[in-house]
Image (cartoon, rainbow, N blue to C red; front, side):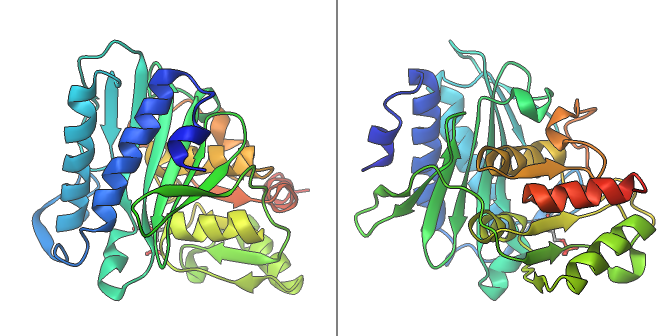
Length: 294
Ligand code: P6P
């Protein structure tokens, strides 16, 4: 089954947003080889933008701005939320190319999208959908519009074909621990040591979207915690944590900042960073209990 057929049951505007973004990701998937350089600019986080970062961002804006489908557009590569002429109230957040610093070493990177009705500065629990496209040996698209997580693979004819419907998080013991061990705060250190004592295997690539995709299929937990000197961690609430947390939650997992469901947080700004734990309910319950001192 093709992506457009699978989307039939959903609101027409949401269906069209997913389809249009999927078409942009097909172009992105073909653009890596000839755009491996670095640009001469940095984003608002002070990170040097790669050619692909800016190109992917520009492609998404070029597709969505004239579509009339999206009212507000927030991107990790843009300083402010953009407002488009639209007949809908749909808001979209994008990380155009998460993990782009890994393109040069040929690791999997991806496009992450959050979908809202109304303000993108709403808690993640108010999202109406999320999707991501992972560019690896396969180009896969996962979406959720509130009724299950569904995975598609780009075939040789340039079509996203259904691979798995109603994806549910696996039960294996894998952990993807971001940040430096020397900087761990006490409760986080206890959490990681507990996982290691229980035989969890370390699987960490440095690409959030790829690492979380692995956790989605195999189980376990991804974390980029608060750490000494960065009590808010590294990952962005709007562009990375909310969309992937929404998807894993709808696949039977959970997402936390260590203390509470991260999808309940009201974003304070577009660029807000949060500590993140995304994975199985068992692992999330463990870290929240440790953070409470239990
Ligand atoms: P570190 C990529 O730059 C990113 O934002 C996420 O995709 C990834 O999880 C994290 O940073 C990796 O950070 O400190 O391990 O290089």
